[in-house]
Length: 450
Ligand code: ADP
Image 1 (cartoon, protein in one colour):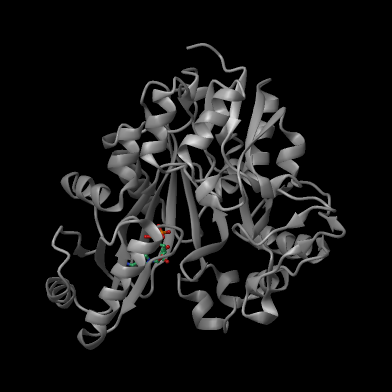
Image 2 (cartoon, rainbow, N blue to C red):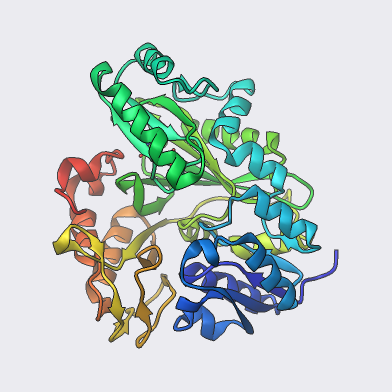
């Protein structure tokens, strides 16, 4: 396959910047496919070329398949990088990109269909004998039937939208009495938010850790894992702080989970970067889902292993990346990432928008800042309020925590409110410091809005 000379970046914010930087290092030009609202952004200034593909509303720009493909073609790109969120896990988009004669930088549409769909993925995993959270993923969506299934599983049960993601579309059911109402409202919300009313049920694990494995399928289809990340610090099922590697795994668990991750990705003919997510409770692990794309928290893996996953994605799409059988991957030290949200912690965490004044990220060794906006840019209300990520690396976990606290204390973001003060509180909490936190850590120790 010929080398790419220009790649279309079908995304915005910090991930668009991340992709542009990887392209620059590889000597590849970029065309940023952006909405009218993102003209004041770093990605817009950094891209070789820019193409406006629609108005601020995501349905008409970042989620519009045709607009993205037309923009990529008109911009002279040979390939499309979807980043994360938006169309990154949309099999129809991957297929349409390929049909248009472009290369989709990610797995094939078939892989996305079999692994990215939560219900299909579970069926595949079941056949392969991988441990799943007990649950019901059947076609029968009748409410009375679903209540019976929930009773069989045993409460508490979590009801999830089959097409859901990003921590949305989930409801906790504590008893039979409330099951009918919650299932019906989950179906209604799933239909309006994700275009399909289909839901499934899982036993709710109430003291679990979220642990995931980075997998990577090379150009020949050889899948290897790039160790684990722990993402148990979550608010409303959304990650806030992630680290590599997990402080909670024994060597035996790490080996078994890594093997399971590679097994499911291999079954789905996986190519490129993906993540296999698990819940870990009482020493047992359960497959949660597979994310068929780059993840927000990929930098912590890069930091402990010294790799560049975005460049590897691009090289794989060019047919050039093959895992070296002589490489023995050993994670070194510890890396932590904090997601910086533009939100007002004193007003229930509502998004905070406006013109950015002074922005300053403190320099120093092994500190990494991934951000999409500079001083003078405007944070608009149209998109996800995550405006930056701060990533640190140090020799061990206690030192990495200490470093992150100092870096956050010295970071300056004026013009909008951010969650930085909350992040510092979380990092200083005894449970976090011990590394024993579960996914209920925030709800247990911090009152909303954290
Ligand atoms: P999404 O695709 O929306 O991110 P996931 O299925 O990956 O949804 O779940 C996100 C988070 O929700 C998990 O990390 C975990 O904290 C919580 N969660 C999901 N399923 C369960 C479950 N069965 N038991 C306990 N917590 C769960």
